[in-house]
Image (cartoon, rainbow, N blue to C red):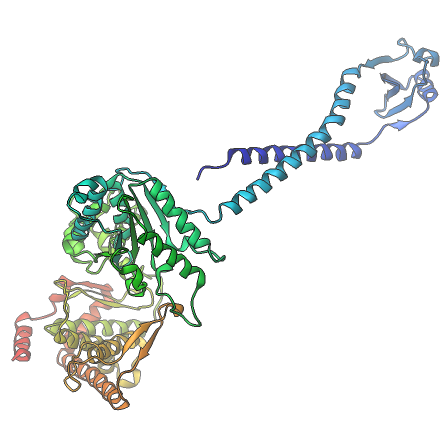
Length: 613
């Protein structure tokens, strides 16, 4: 929005007036503080001239000022129709000067007349302009605050790495905006609303901008929360204004970010509904359903919570096409890393494919943050290029937080942490369905005193029961190692997060995944999102107390079995656990290549074969 130059100009004039008046008052105040000349009779000045005490005499209108030789001054008023000569003050006795005040008197008189008028007029003008601005804001309260971007090629599909399937679906939208006749001749209608759905950071907003860039049409962008105000009806008014502007600029795209802010299911929530939000949603529904075929206006919206949207939004004729933007796979992550490192001085030997393989589950925003952190590290070290080491370190920083090398641990705590992490690593390495160990460290990050980083060799879409069982055993590996090497009475709180994860996983296996032999392939209970409580859920138990008791028993059994498996492995590999822990105390960090050197792979292969048999 362009600034109001007239408004800023009037403010400038008013501020100048204020400064001017302040300077006049300060000058007057300071002038009053200066020592004033002594008031005397004209005869006294004449006597001082006769006595030779006066250095000079100056005349200003009827005022006679005598400057004495001692530095002081005397002032007297000359009587009308008299001269200094009448008092015996002549040039031969002292120096006499006459000041011409006719010009200054004119300016003084003019200033005294017009300056107050000018000040009062400026004050009135400023007040009127302020009142006009307030009226203008009041009149525009119901206007849309959407930002208009005219079609340009700054962002195109080529700038959005990955998400090829999503781009293909959106290309139809672009092609319709460019060539609507081709579709209408065949009786085809492009979807009036396209809903971009995906996890946070997957590039939904970027994809919408790419659509506008490719189509080269006006692009109205607004966040859903900008519709809602404290006054009922303002949101609906803004919706009407936005759609009216879009129709005037058709073909055009309206992009509404975070649609769930106003698109939540009506009537949900504690104590009734939210009138302003629901009126805004109703207006959107009416506007979308009221489009004519010739409008050429397409609504693109983004959300990561499609499950809470009102069903009326998702019906055919409104947001009847949903484009899912998934988390990128390994190939897509490599492409995204290339985009984000394009403008960074990356060392020639950097392997971005290896970085992509090390970051399963990272979104596009995570990868951008990763490359930015790597560049910051390089700058901190006064390097000219970003190296592989910087990128590797930034992965851990994004995933687990920055290192806390200054955090001082007691020697005993450090030793317990080393054995704890060694236990996790050994159990996960030996179990056939657990993820391989990528790195072990006893350097604190966030709340963790140490960590064992397991990295899957492949990206799974489906998880097996065998993998879950091995994961529970791995999680319990740290606790049983503490018990084995330091005694049960000396176990610590270090395994608190491990036990929480193991319990949650075991309960999911029993109640959601149908992986309990005793209860069979059945789900128990379901959760409803409660919008007024944020992420809180309310659980509906569709099972009896007897089933609840069995669920608890099955969860306990899964965790106990995992603990027993981990306990057996730790006891049979105490030597390896000790070696790893001692090296951790010396090195603080062990990578995957160093870790594999602790094992006799032939012996491990025999154990794995026995387990599989």
